[in-house]
Image 1 (cartoon, rainbow, N blue to C red):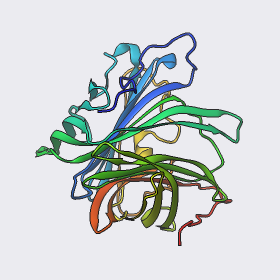
Image 2: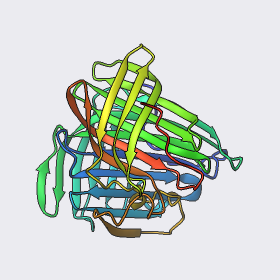
Image 3: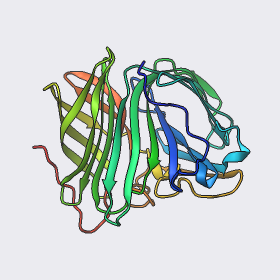
Length: 337
């Protein structure tokens, strides 16, 4: 597919490696014609801290089941944590993901295949506390083959959509952010993917991404405007984004986010990744999707919502990741009318 990025996780510490160095991956999995079940899973290694951790977030029509695991990295084979195993079969082209028996009732035996080139950028942000965030960031759309077993029922997921995200470096994002969007809308022949971060006054801190075409073209995204509808609890209901690309293309994409779930606090987001927890640490919990749990009740507002998208008369499916600042100084401001 695309050469260049060293895909396997960096697992050995070096003398010049920062103490907060990480190397992480995340995959999502959902039907190519629906929003449930939706799975987000991932793992990260932190060589200077001798830590490897991982998570599984499973969203069904009625609840979200969460598994978080961690152990000492030198006690593993460098490609697993708890019931989660991974293998880079071919850099930037094929990954194997396996999830063994665990408390979520979900088991997976998957091959992920890239359907378009990856987009790779570097996130470099000066934080309000004086620390600097600097890490490589890659995302790439794909499709799966294999099986998903949920509560004893096995489903062939061949053809299901999934996007992977890779990040490597030092991440210390803190303070000053107002709106965060990580947008991955998959359509039959292209994927709209971007990361947008705004400050609490609506000013742009970061925009990166591309329209990733199945025929191999990458068209960088140069502008994004948005008009989003949220509940009183900062949960996304629906929204429209207008995208402009370097090639001069313009797209207007709508999203229906009514499926619910995808609250990433269930995956340890909110500052818990990379913590030293000793060997064989495991946590499991369940969030009901009845309105009692949401971005304002959890320790992280970050949400990876599986959505139905609409563009040019076509339906698409994918992940709309969002977070609004909970600071009293922030109120969401649409930039698209």
